[in-house]
Amino acid sequence: MKAGIIAIVVLVLLGFVGCNKYNSLVKLEENVKQKWGLVETQYQRRADLIDNLVATVKGAANFEQSTLTQVVEARANATKVQINADDLTPEKIAEFQKAQGALSQSLGRLLAVAESYPTLQSVQNFRDLQAQIEGTENRIATVRGDFNVSVTEYNKAVRVFPGNIIAGISGFKQKGYFASDPGAEKAPKVDFGK
Image (cartoon, rainbow, N blue to C red):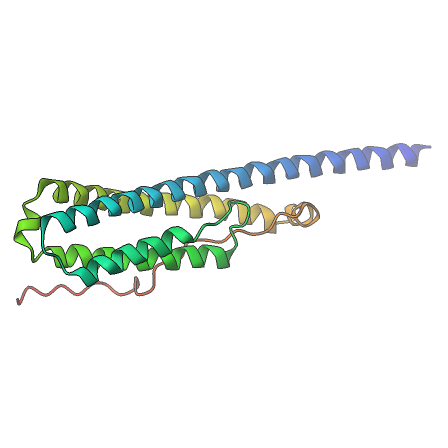
């Protein structure tokens, strides 16, 4: 009889700990999803600004068509990559990051080439959009960092005992991180000799 009571108490305590851990995992996963929503919002903001930037460039200068085409195509490819917040696997995050990186590169080329068009540089709308895109790039870096922090907290909870047992039983899986863009480990070369 005494052993039966002890067994029941132990089972109740294990059930309580399991429920508590499960609820903790749900909260951490929801935090990751919320941070992912912020990442998507900033990337969408950038995509919207790029449309306006391309239209401004077309209207203000006889601009290099190939550069504009590359930006438009990269934007279209980047917006095609959609990830469900429930499926933030490392592979999906890498695919998303690759598409966004291609857009960043083509946008960088557009802004670099725009420097050689004085008439374009004098258009206030272009300068405003350029400043908004720069601000958005900073916001993107911030929300990506916040996302990675929330993924770290979640992944720790999924991997550490006893959370790994509850996570395995409940179907919680590790989430992917944003990584540094390729080539980010090399500092840009500054040349004042020109």
